[in-house]
Amino acid sequence: MAITREDVVHVARLARLELSDDELERMREQLSAILDAVGKVAELDLEGIEPTAHPLDLVNVLADDEQRPCLTREEALANAPDPEDGFFGVPAV
Amino acid sequence: MTIDTLRLTAEDAMRLLERREVSSSELHAAYLDAAGARDDELHAYLCTVAEPNGDGVPVAFKDVISTKGIETTAGSKILAGYKPVFDATVATRCYDAGLSLLGKTNMDEFAMGSSTENSAYGPSKNPWDPGRVPGGSSGGSAAAVAGGLAPWALGSDTGGSIKQPAALCGIVGLRPTYGTVSRYGIVAFASSLDQVGPLTRTVRDCALLYRIIAGRDACDSTTVELPEPVEIPEAADLKGLRVGVPRQLNEAEGIEPGVADAVARTIALCEELGAEVGGCELPLSVEYGMPCYYLIAPAEASSNLARYDGVRYGYRADVEGDLGTLYERTRHDGFGDEPKRRIMLGTYALSAGYYDAFYGQAQKVRTIIGNEFRAVLEHFDVLVSPTSPTVAFPFGAKTANPVAMYLSDVLAIPPNMAGLPSLSIPCGLSEGLPVGLQLIGPQFSENLLFRVGHALEQAIGFDTVPTRLR
Image (cartoon, rainbow over all chains, first blue to last red):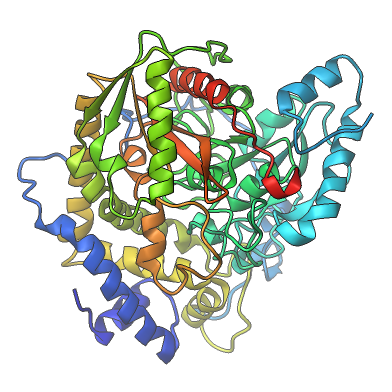
């Protein structure tokens, strides 16, 4: 299944991933090859089959509503690349 | 006393500790000495811990497991320098059992790969032949155990990442039933598939380590209580057991003749040990398992890896510009090729216009795979096949072709899609390299897999010490 350069640009944008021109072309070729290999699932007639999201029959696992210890502000910020005044620092949006 | 780290099992080590014939710091030091001697070559560890933090047997963790205050990179540059502020539940359970952390083992970046060649920190080598891959993604854990640099280790398995490296390095690896081991604190790849499990030198060690890590965890709502306690296997026969040989898993294209021979010999051994052996069919699971996996796992990965944005932790690109540019550049610089490919593939499969044809369809195929295994397992207690179609392959053999690399897990993936447990044990050599046998059972049948694995292990008598290190 051939995908176009425009498809790759669009998907990279959705994924918030910068790709160089070389990477775009290589990605186009490789994604096409991978989709050729995996696209065969589309050929099966699966009318009436329920999808499986998860292999266990667990639904709505609830926890008691009680306070438990959580990270301190210092711990939460310990790995931040640019903490500022107790917050995560980022460039202008 | 002299400790032969290549031969000592974790169970032996426990016995020595009980009898006070060795101290935990002597044990810890012996493995670090072995790493000092051999890890320049093997590159199994990304980091080691100098002092033991427990009074029991040492253990190595795949670098996907969060360890408080100890760098945890998941093999990625985007997490370089990241020191978790909490421990994963499996780490806590190991520490509570007295195990001491030897170090963090190398892996394919974000557990995406079958050779460790996708690690941002360079590949690990196979202790049987350093010119060949140890398998992946838990290749560092497998190389550490096979190379005598750890008595046992934890890995993680999404599409074969424990079983395949265990097979390629000639050791035992368990991918547990989905839901039996907590993923709290595990760097997430594909959440409906990820499981943590042991890599060990014997099946009994595997059961011992599984007993430590398994069970419900309030911090992971996808975990469940085990229906029965973990038993350490003792039986030497397979009397009364029905062993199924799925044709498609044993005759798949690409299975090397030497691998097929070793597995066929082991199947004959099952009969000698008293099992009733019969053929069976899994046509759709094998044909569609790999395609189904490579839609579902990348889709989930594209969502899980969205968190690496350079804001809260990990690498941040140095950019002039707005927040969007920061995200895009950080992810461009921080991720290697394979995570980028999977993020793109997954985003594509989930995007408007393709969701139903790819992701939705793959989820239905997953139902079919589950049904097919369930039907076969009504007639058999356990299924057998090769774990990997090939023995360890040379570096670079599959790096240029992603699909060829993906096929390395074609036999390991189908039971994973169904949430079933599977155990890989070494069953012989082909061209001087280990061959792994995959044992598959129903959900929560770990005790049965251990029993069968242990009986076969005793009968096979495989020497787990790599030939060149004997």
